[in-house]
Length: 90
Image 1 (tube, rainbow, N blue to C red):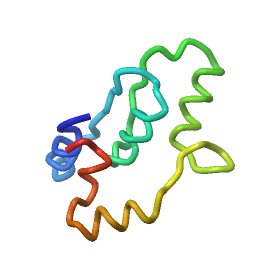
Image 2: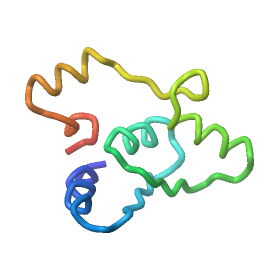
Image 3: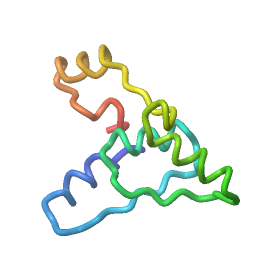
């Protein structure tokens, strides 16, 4: 995911709706994309309703999904001045 955060930040000043396409519908990649503030994801290799439901669950918090937040690591990143870069690979 290197560079995604930079591209999303650059496009945030424009009237554009960027689409992020992870390499595959992997929980870690989807969570990182959402963590980088991607608002639209194009997920490849979604072949059926079950796979679609699973992919959507990666973007939602419990009880409707599996997305989570680690408050201590987020605070630490912000305190160290890293912001979202650590989570987004930038």
